Image (tube, rainbow, N blue to C red; front, side, top):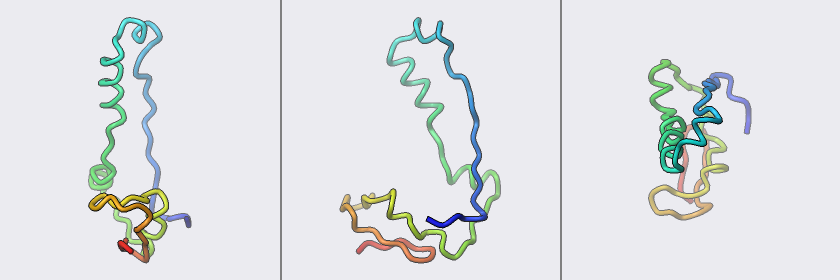
Length: 88
């Protein structure tokens, strides 16, 4: 994939548990807490930061990590060109 100049990365690093906390929590409690930390909405972040990606080839290469159609579940049937993805 080509570098997209408008796209930026943003990360937050947080210590979720101490060693002592992990010992005292159940697996379900750890999973529930981690799930809240790993929940991420890229569209919401883009809206909140008012970042507009206007690069004319912004969809190209999306089929590489997105190999399965979310609607019909067909694998390796997605192709991209410009700002669009297509089912082939």
